[in-house]
Length: 306
Image 1: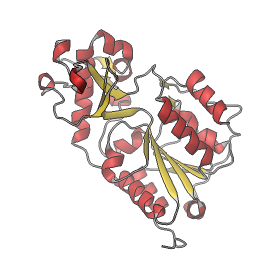
Image 2: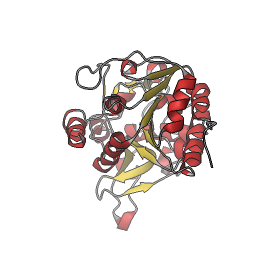
Image 3: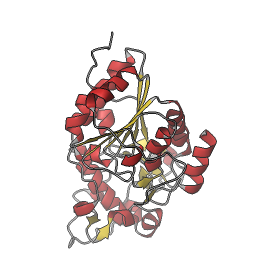
Image 4: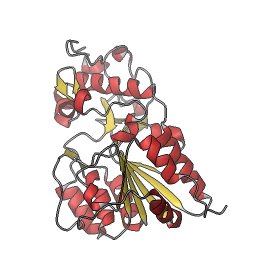
C-alpha cells in the first residue's frame, strides 16, 4: 500500500497542482457523513495515533489570506502563476517581491484558536502515550508558534530559504529578508515592479557560496520533498483517526491523503466552513468556522486519565 501511495503521489500526483477533480473509484465508496459531535468525541477518546491534515482555512483564521477568490491576484498576476519555477527563473525579483509581501504579512499574525487547540491536544495526549501529527499544506510558521512539535510541512515554509547553487536550506526570519526588498511587495494592481538586480536579491551565506536564494516552498509544478512524503506515507498508513481541517481538498497530492486514510476504514472527520470535493468520502463533517468547531472536538474527554 505504501508503494502504491508513493507511486501515485510521486509519479501521477506528485506535482503540486490545483484541481477541482473529484476522485472516484478505488479510493473509497461515498458515505453519508455525520455531524454528531458526541459520537465523534467517543471515537476521538479511543484513538491512539491521530493524523491532522490542515489547509489554508486554518491560516485564514489568523487573518492570513488564502490567495484564492478576492486574494487570488497579486498586482496583475495570479498567485499560482507567480509560484512556479518558471516564473522564478524568468523574473526572480518579481517573485521575491511577492514572497516578501507574504512573509511580512505572516510575521505580523498570531496563532488562532485552531492552532492553539491543536498544540494543546498534542501536548495533552502525549502524556497519555497517544500521538498527534500535523500534516500541513500551510507555509506559515503558525503551527510551531502555537507550540505544536510534530509538524510535517508538505509545501515547505515561508520562513526558510534554499540556495539555488549549493542547495543549503536554512531558517530565515529576517525582516526584510534583504535591504533592497524593504517596503517592497505592495500588491496593488498599479504598483510597478521593483526590478531589483539579481545580485542584490537574497544570497546564500553558506561557506561563501553567495548563490541566489529562493523561498523553500514547493512551487506549483514541483514534486514534494521525498523525505517529507515518506514520513507522510507512514502516518497515513498507521493513524487510527484523521481530521481534515480547513483544507480545500483541491490541491494535490495533499487532497488525496484523507480519502486514502478513509479507504482503510479509518474514521475521517472534516472541519470546514463548507463542503469540499472530498466530503463525501469522510465519516464526519462539521461545518462552520474551525475556530469554533475544532476546540470543542479536541477538548479533554471525560474518559481521559492522566
